[in-house]
Image: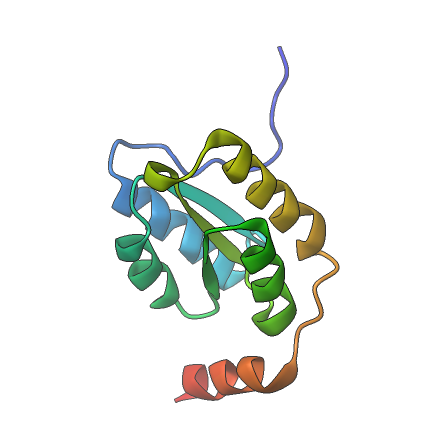
Length: 119
């Protein structure tokens, strides 16, 4: 039996509680980043980005995920599976996982987010 060392945040049936648990873990530093795959992303984006320390991006294409990592060091990826093909979702998750550690934080957007979170 193979065990997973990474925490899984789909404990219950409520996507909202699962997402909040993931975002709380990212926000407090318990995990470095997370991925949520949901039917629709708008609700999840609002909830995720209301959590201090979370910089969520909606995955629409691999290129937009890479840009979000470069521009504001996104640490939560929300993929909307209602309008994505499986290979597109896989490419976005792989891009996020591969480039997340190498993403360069900083710049005007990160500075603005930090300022907003301090108030």
